[in-house]
Image (cartoon, rainbow, N blue to C red; front, side, top):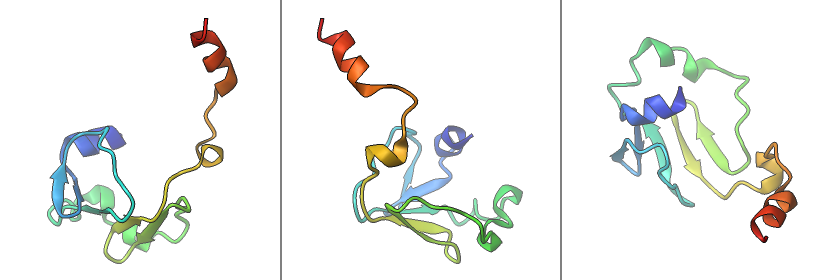
Length: 93
């Protein structure tokens, strides 16, 4: 669902529209909804949500519906469902 929202250009990164799901954000980038998209029913109660758990590398501002990238995710936070050493072993053959 998130990929579709990005593809339909719901988001701005540093004030510029982004429609590429694989867009790489960097430290200090500001990610926000487009003003006309904030009025959609899907996001109507989002600013009132109190139980949103955000990653430590994002600073979320619910009143403005935007977040600032303040770091990078660590491998422990991402917790991939694979064993990384096995991938290296497989491709090193």
